Image (cartoon, rainbow, N blue to C red):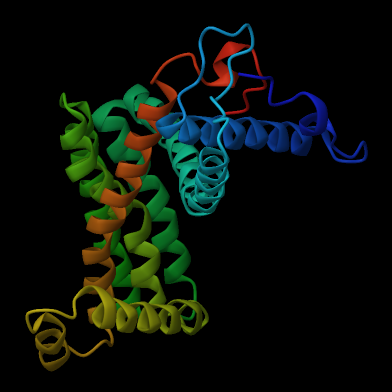
Length: 271
């Protein structure tokens, strides 16, 4: 495969910061590699040539099909590549968090969580939030601490499925539950969290759960106010954790698929 950083691929403005140039270079390598791999699905690369490139048909019909497939691949990448980047970012922080928690151990993770959410609880105590709000944040901090420890336990078990199915949702709960609970009693946070939560809940009911009478049952049985927001975000931690864990699994599979990625052959690698 030709060097994706050669020619036009290497023409970047001189005034861009070094870190941004590295990011752009890495994105160009990824996009070029992913699109080449897409073309390889139908138009396999010719290994007999000194320069390995996708086979280009000589007939008119084949040429048209080649370019139509290339355009379709570009359209697919506009959807897939942002998810790929999100997976890279999630993997980056997940792996560092994993090393951090592994070094602390169960007792260290519990103590760290108690300190973090204890300080957060103290901040809510001296804030204008009502006392019952402070109590709710303390309870949420306890739940978050338990979730963090249990997430570490499932992370240490062998198997990617266990990590994605259990560790990631518990990790999301451990990180986001206390701030959501605090937003129930803080007008400042509530003005940000609640409208977005309501819009998200309406979208989920209208698009995801609108079958077999599930959306109608939820609307008739629950009212989205007060503690119901906590239940909503606690429930969302499961699919959000599955989604992020699935993205990390996908990225790990792509990165570990072999040395055909140009970044693995000495190209610019920023991840």
